[in-house]
Length: 63
Image (cartoon, rainbow, N blue to C red):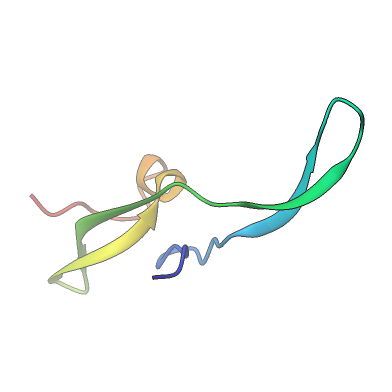
C-alpha cells in the first residue's frame, strides 16, 4: 500500500537523517495519510487522504 494522497497526489519524499556528528543517512518523509469515507461525484468511497486536504476542505466527509 503506497503512501499517496488520492486527492492531491502528495507522496513520500526522501531526505537525510543528520546525526550530532554530522553523519548523514537516507530516510523517507511520509505524509500523514488517513483512510476515510468521502463523497466523490455523489458516491460514497473509502479513500486514503492526507490531513492537509482534510483540513483545507478539499473533500467532503461522508457521515
